Structures are given as structure tokens and as C-alpha cells.
Image (tube, rainbow, N blue to C red; front, side, top):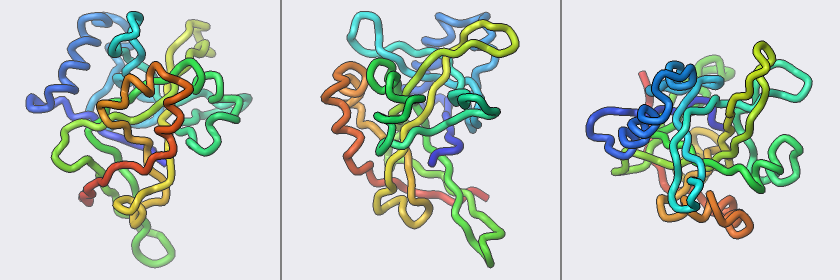
Length: 208
């Protein structure tokens, strides 16, 4: 699974800074922009997300909330398994028509250590020599139960871990290469082949 990730907006991270600048230009002064986070992103946080552009050329950056509300229950669903996303009622319409990309600098995972798994070590997983990774996601809109106003939300797709990830966890996000972003966002029928590809090699750092 992917339970937390990180967005670094340091000066040398040009792509992420461009995304945040676009959101600033379009959403400054809105509640969504005021609540949008960078740094370590937790479930239910509002974070930058890339959606298809209206011109069907490239993408547009928007602030969305991480997690679909659960049907008939509390809490949110933050991940969708690529193996079952096409048949789950919560996700199948979004897979067909509402795909998105989540920009990240890396994501976190925990590995059990010590006796009986009582201690867990936290790892940061990143692409080698790349300041940004693109995670495949889905989005939808929901009414706020308190105000009735609709808000946008996203989930991150996950797949089986590859060799570079398997020693830490058995799942990982679906990571898209930059050249595959248009295919994921626009060519919906053809894009599903991306979900079956093995993810790129990652480097891991223990967080202390």
C-alpha cells in the first residue's frame, strides 16, 4: 500500500515548483489552496494532483483531498489495487473516465523489525537521480457531509512490489514514466496495459 508520501518544493525541484505555482495562480485565496500541504502528505490532506487538460494536451494542476469516503462507514479509502480496480464499484467509473497523476518526491513504507513485529522501521523510497515521480491515481467528487458542498478527492493505485521494493513491503504505488502520462490520462482503453508493468527500480533510505 501507500500510506504516506512526500512532496519536496525545494528550489532545485523545478517540476514540483512549477506545479505549485500553477495552483497558486488559479486557486490562491480558496479554502483548498489554504489547506494544501507539501512535505509529508497524510491521508485526508489536500495535495497537488494533475488532471487532464480541457484541450486534451498536457495536464492541469489542482488541489484535491487524499481519500475517497467509505460507502456507509467512517474513514477514507486511500489506495486502489490495480488487480481489482476495474471491478470495484467505488473505482470502476473513475478508472474509465477520471484518471489523474499524483506528483511526489518519494513515498514512505514501514518494515517490521524486532521481535514479533513490535518495532517498525520507516523507509523513504525514491527514484534514483530523479527529484520527482508520477503516481497513477483516480479522482472523483463528493458532497461534504457537513456543508453539502462538493469537493474533489483522489486515490493512489498500487501494484505488487518489484525486486527493489519487496524486501520492505509487498505492495507499491503504480509509478508512471513521464512519457506515459498522456497515455494514462487520455487513452483510457490502451492505458490499462500500464497497470501490468513492473515498476521502476527504487532506492530506499531509512528515516531516523
